[in-house]
Each structure stands twice: as C-alpha cells, then as structure tokens.
Length: 105
Image 1 (cartoon, rainbow, N blue to C red):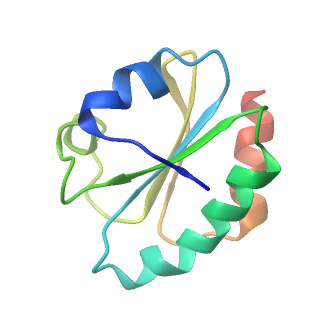
Image 2 (image 1 turned 45 degrees about the horizontal axis):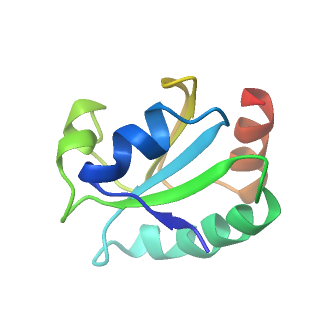
C-alpha cells in the first residue's frame, strides 16, 4: 500500500530518503486522482524495497504542495536525493510513472 505522507513526515520520508521517491499529490474529491490512485498502489507493490511510493492529501497537507508549486491535481513528483527529477500533472499511463522511477534509480 502506498505510504501516507504528511507535512510532518515529508522531510524524513521524501527529502532524506536514500531511494527514489514517487509522491502523488491528490484529494478525495478529485475525479482524476481516483483514476491515478490504483496505479500508485500497484507501483508501491512493484517497487517495494527499491523505491518509496507515497501519497500526500493536499487538503490536509498544504505545506509541501505549496512549496513545490502543485496547483493542479493529481500531480506526481519523483524525488532523488531530495530534488525533483520528474513531474507529471494530470493522469498518465502507469508506464510513464514506472519510467520516471526507473530513471531515478
């Protein structure tokens, strides 16, 4: 299951990770986010132990969404060594997210 990331845990889980981190910025009311959700869950299982795959609910955790300029959701960011290396806005095919994680490895 994808890791629930909050403003309180973002620094430790995402920025200090020694593995690539995919972060899905989403909200419960967002239709396209519900389309991306199952893809994120699949990726979290497929990359278990190789990468961190998590989700940030932007309604409850606005700090890092604002910091990284997330204006539309879903926005999926991939971090490597605390830096953004990939950004996908809107719904993308699963392979696009997998390729982004692979490129960060």
